Image (cartoon, rainbow, N blue to C red; front, side, top):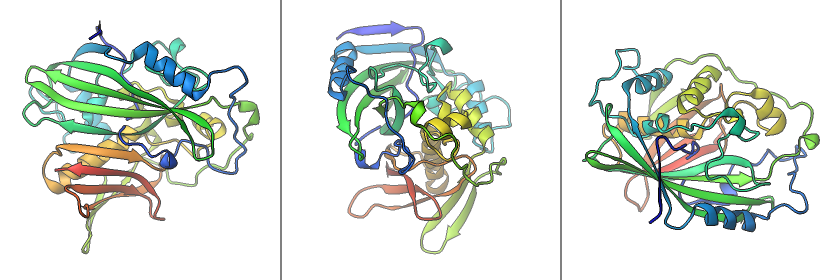
Length: 346
């Protein structure tokens, strides 16, 4: 097995799993005249996928080590409005909640090395497939080897697959899956498989000059509100402000412009506002599970289906999956739009 070791290898920030390409929300909304800049002579999706696998696939692994410090965890707790966030820095030995590991092993590329959309280029497909969007994923935890503040942990990364696909509009794209294992002194604590979709770069000359902004309240929200719904369990109402998105981007060192540059996300990417991070929605679901069910999950499989924007108020609900073990958690809007869905093994 080929192995490359780094002091701190960049990690990929948007999270994976079984992928239904008809439910990926990364295409611009219909009717806005968007076209890709895929020009004659550039690689096809099949060629780009083959090249990525040739460069990074097979038995290659990439390792880096990091000390999990309490200061990073405390800042995330403050960002999430968690009740212990304003206390003293978590002491060594404090368990790191499920999903919170995303603020460790963050990218280290210089700004000059980032893509036009601000994303790091770790395991990226070749041009013209330069627009990376998060799609979904799976995570599984070992209860006997949890991650804790003060641990020195090794992140082991490998490229699982790179697959050419067609979008629902018929355009080419490359779906990339990466698996990360986090191993500490007590053994492997977490297996995290992440998926990204790479689409062709947008030709900005074809983009409308101005798009209508989303009409929402983007002021700083209070902590998440829980409501007991008759016969339907607990409904949690959540809302993220632009400041919260900025803080989460800073903690994960994620420079993707759709999360903080409103001109870019509206004018170039065609969104109605700043996009809430996929990993932030995932953490919200995992926190909901811990708060409502009183325990940490053994695993989760999740999928992004529609974007959420800064200032939008949305709901998290759960129910036991019909005919299956575990529960289904749904993130959705009041109009019935499902933005994220997950299966949780308790």
